[in-house]
Length: 331
Image 1 (cartoon, rainbow, N blue to C red):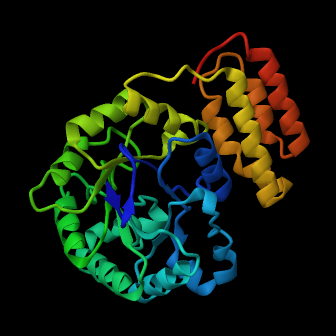
Image 2: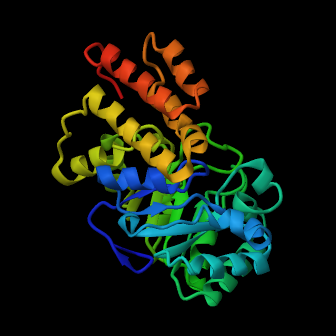
C-alpha cells in the first residue's frame, strides 16, 4: 500500500497524533517494541509556530529510527498554515498532515481542527495553498463531520483528493461526539469503497484488539488502521495486532514484569529527553491507563501519579512489579 508516496507493508498500522502523548520518547518505544508502521508527532499549532517559533519547534524532533513519520499541523488562517508547513518541512518529515479532526473546544470553536468541517471553502483553500507551498507529500486526518446532521466526509475526501492530498485518515466520529459513543466504521467503509476514491483511506476509532483490527481490514477494506487512545499505557498493542493480522494467531501475552519493564524504559527515555520534572510528568497518562482496573492498586497508583521524583517512581514501579507479578495477568 502506498500512503504519502511511502510503500508500506501489509496491514499497515499508524500511531495517531496525540497532544502530550506522541512525543519522541513514546514514538521511540512504540517503534522499539515493533508492529507500528507510521508514527506522527504531537499536533503543531500554526499560529503558535508563527508567533512563538522556538517554543513550538521543541515539539518537532525527529529521529531516523522513528521513520516514516508525519508532522501534523492545525490552524484556521491560510497564511499561517502555509508558513507552518514550510517551517516543519525543514525538519524533513516523510509527510505533512492537516488536522481536520481535533474536537477540543479551544481549537474547533475558533474554526481549526474539526471546526474546518463547518467551513469547507476555507478547509479546501488551506489544503490547496499548503500543497502548493511545499514539496513534501501532504495528507489529512478528519472526522465524519461536525455533527450527525452534517456528515460531509465523502465531499471532503473527494475534494481533497482532487486538490492533491496523498492520503486520508478518517476518525469514525463527528465533532459533536468528541470521544463518546461508538466510532461509525460504516461511514469509513463507504468512503473507502466509493468508486471515485483513489487515495488510500486509513480507518481510526475504537480499534482496541487484534480481532477488531482484522474485522476492520476484512469488512471495510481500509488501506490501514490508526490507533490512538488504545496505545496509551499499552505501546505493545501494535506488535500484538500486527502479529495477529499476519499469522492469524495471537502472540503469547506479555508478562506483568515485561510490561512494567517497558514502563520503566519509557520513563527513563522521557527523563533523559525532558529532564526529571517534565519527564516524570509526561509519563503519567500512561500510568493512568496501564493501571486502570487492577484490583487493590489504587493507593499505589495515586502515589505514582502524585510523585515527580524519578528515582522514587522507579522504586514504586519495582515494588508494584514484585507485589503483583504472580497475582494478576491483565492488560
